[in-house]
Length: 75
Image 1 (cartoon, helix red, strand yellow):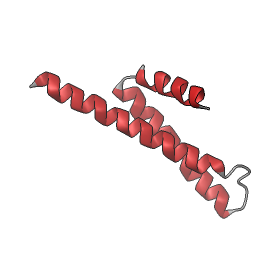
Image 2: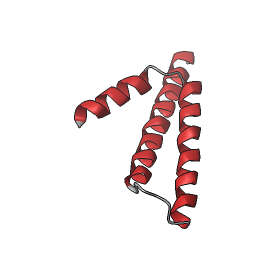
Image 3: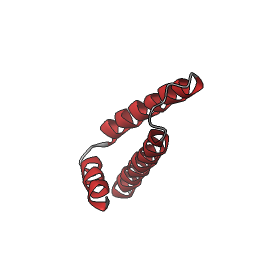
Image 4: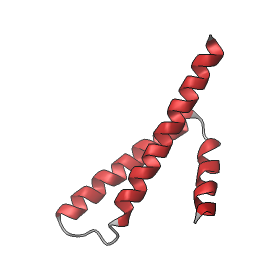
Protein backbone atom coordinates (compact mmCIF):
# COMPACT_ATOMS: atom_id res chain seq x y z
CA UNK A 1 0.00 0.00 0.00
CA UNK A 2 2.83 2.39 0.77
CA UNK A 3 4.16 1.91 -2.73
CA UNK A 4 0.92 3.19 -4.28
CA UNK A 5 1.06 6.27 -2.07
CA UNK A 6 4.72 6.81 -2.95
CA UNK A 7 3.95 6.54 -6.66
CA UNK A 8 1.08 9.01 -6.31
CA UNK A 9 3.28 11.48 -4.43
CA UNK A 10 6.03 11.15 -7.03
CA UNK A 11 3.48 11.81 -9.76
CA UNK A 12 2.10 14.85 -7.94
CA UNK A 13 5.58 16.24 -7.25
CA UNK A 14 6.28 16.31 -10.99
CA UNK A 15 3.33 18.64 -11.63
CA UNK A 16 3.58 22.42 -11.51
CA UNK A 17 1.29 24.62 -9.42
CA UNK A 18 -1.23 25.25 -12.20
CA UNK A 19 -1.61 21.53 -12.93
CA UNK A 20 -1.98 20.85 -9.21
CA UNK A 21 -4.74 23.45 -8.98
CA UNK A 22 -6.55 21.84 -11.91
CA UNK A 23 -6.28 18.41 -10.28
CA UNK A 24 -7.56 19.82 -7.01
CA UNK A 25 -10.58 21.40 -8.67
CA UNK A 26 -11.35 18.13 -10.49
CA UNK A 27 -11.28 16.22 -7.20
CA UNK A 28 -13.45 18.83 -5.49
CA UNK A 29 -15.96 18.53 -8.33
CA UNK A 30 -15.91 14.75 -7.92
CA UNK A 31 -16.55 15.13 -4.19
CA UNK A 32 -19.56 17.32 -4.97
CA UNK A 33 -20.87 14.66 -7.34
CA UNK A 34 -20.36 12.00 -4.68
CA UNK A 35 -22.27 14.07 -2.13
CA UNK A 36 -25.20 14.50 -4.51
CA UNK A 37 -25.14 10.78 -5.28
CA UNK A 38 -25.11 10.00 -1.57
CA UNK A 39 -28.22 12.13 -1.15
CA UNK A 40 -29.99 9.96 -3.70
CA UNK A 41 -28.48 6.71 -2.33
CA UNK A 42 -26.53 5.93 -5.50
CA UNK A 43 -23.00 5.78 -4.06
CA UNK A 44 -21.47 2.35 -4.50
CA UNK A 45 -18.09 2.99 -2.86
CA UNK A 46 -18.25 5.34 0.12
CA UNK A 47 -14.50 5.06 0.67
CA UNK A 48 -14.06 7.42 -2.28
CA UNK A 49 -15.00 10.32 0.00
CA UNK A 50 -12.01 9.77 2.25
CA UNK A 51 -9.62 9.02 -0.62
CA UNK A 52 -10.57 12.16 -2.52
CA UNK A 53 -10.44 14.41 0.56
CA UNK A 54 -6.98 13.14 1.41
CA UNK A 55 -5.70 13.61 -2.12
CA UNK A 56 -7.06 17.16 -2.16
CA UNK A 57 -5.22 17.81 1.12
CA UNK A 58 -1.98 16.39 -0.32
CA UNK A 59 -2.32 18.57 -3.40
CA UNK A 60 -3.07 21.70 -1.38
CA UNK A 61 0.00 20.96 0.76
CA UNK A 62 2.17 20.68 -2.35
CA UNK A 63 0.75 23.93 -3.73
CA UNK A 64 1.60 25.65 -0.45
CA UNK A 65 5.09 24.12 -0.52
CA UNK A 66 5.69 25.39 -4.07
CA UNK A 67 4.35 28.82 -3.15
CA UNK A 68 6.63 29.11 -0.15
CA UNK A 69 9.61 27.87 -2.14
CA UNK A 70 8.92 30.57 -4.74
CA UNK A 71 8.66 33.23 -2.04
CA UNK A 72 12.00 32.19 -0.55
CA UNK A 73 13.69 32.29 -3.95
CA UNK A 74 12.40 35.80 -4.66
CA UNK A 75 13.76 37.17 -1.36
